[in-house]
Length: 334
Ligand code: NAD
Image 1 (spheres, protein in one colour):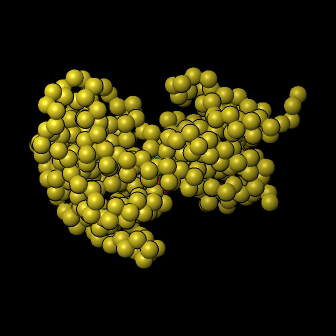
Image 2 (tube, rainbow, N blue to C red; image 1 turned 60 degrees about the vertical axis):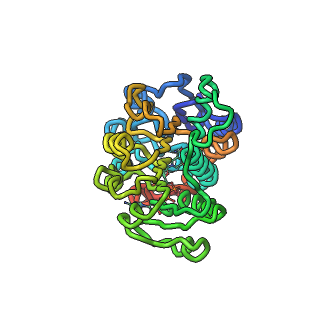
Image 3 (cartoon, rainbow, N blue to C red; image 1 turned 120 degrees about the horizontal axis):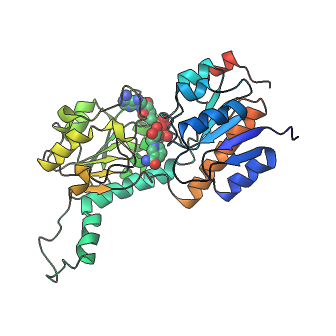
């Protein structure tokens, strides 16, 4: 019997990552496109040494409590880890890692692309032409949008991705406002970003873009009351996590014209229901949680997740340990 450690992977990873993983461990992969059921996750953590998973897997206390004593770590292929009960993992001495940094620029590219698409109604224009609605050769008033150049952007969460979006906004000659629970002096100094409270940001921005993690403190951060503060001509862009925005309130805001348009990559429930009323609105540009989805970045994320798992199973402190307190429960051996 092999004495190699065992890793369970909840989806096929890009080839480079898979090769690396298989060179070190005995690997079993869930072959379906849909996430594996909870019962299977519980069964696997009972027998393997590590789990590599995606944000679609709910790794709650029940799954974590099913882990056997040989189980050392959960390596998530994403920067956000709100699907994992980190506290439960820490209590059990289970290391949790994520993939920060490698997806920052790709996600910021997408957030800015969505901002531009919403402002200039690109998704609507595409449908307009393809559905044969284009009859007038050139319409002075056809599909008019909002300017981006020189406008004010409000960034909620000036971390890695928020700062990368700010760099793009600077290139568009935008005034940059931001709100965060911590000041980002680097962004203030290098990009001229101005720290304001959330209320001021919402009142003064032409574009509001969200880059906070999903936490109890950020759930429904954008609610009815706050949407009412925004300009009637403003656009809201969300590439963070769906539950940061109250979708029911957003629907009202868009339908009743409190704000002008929204670009949503993330949803309260994913996949979002095809009957979600937001999808019926022309002023909503929708995408299926793809902001980090470039070919190169998805490979980098998967390789990073494998490197994290390798460190965990070699008894080292992994480079992207989320729950540093776990070292008190189960110290590394190096
Ligand atoms: P980060 O930790 O570098 O930045 C997050 C920022 O939010 C920090 O500066 C933090 O201080 C701030 N923050 C935390 N709580 C706050 C609060 N209550 N109010 C205001 N600010 C608060 O993280 P990052 O790498 O920039 O990623 C941000 C998030 O983007 C991730 O957690 C993830 O959920 C999401 N994300 C989504 C995609 C996608 O495909 N749509 C891709 C990558 C990341």
